[in-house]
Length: 192
Image (cartoon, rainbow, N blue to C red; front, side, top):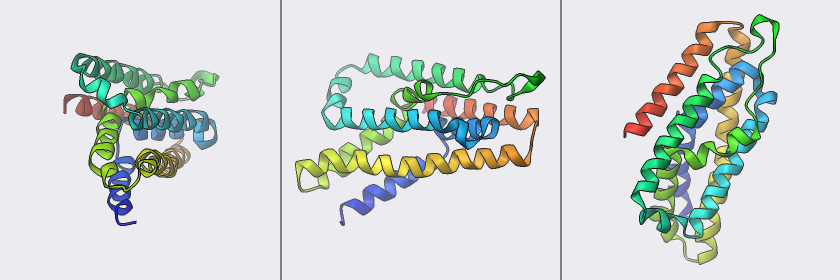
């Protein structure tokens, strides 16, 4: 258990803090509510789990030998997340027409394209996984720990957005402020 607590502390700090995925979830919650955002949240969780499993099976070694691929991935990631954020520029049901919420497929690729996710996954597997005594623990504990805390904290961010959306209804500037905040975080993560 002494190997688990540092990993869990790291994961809590990484998953609970603002990042592109959490801010997209907050914007989605504010615009469409928690229930309509569940497919997007589910896609985020499955995409991160797939990335963690790929990393556990050695995908990082392939990427470390291809720095251009990592750079390209970062820019594609930023572009895609900016696109998702800008999709939310006009609030739902403006002009009487409901807008489409973000779905499972849009969420599925956010984490595999996120520089913050790559950084936290790389650190978890390089710094914490080697402290586990068995190979099974090294391969299972990191992905399952991320899965648990991601479901918890992504839900909290989405519920916070939904609460904000209920408190401040039909406020164009709140929605656009969340979009601009998301774009700022995407730019910050990309330039780190």
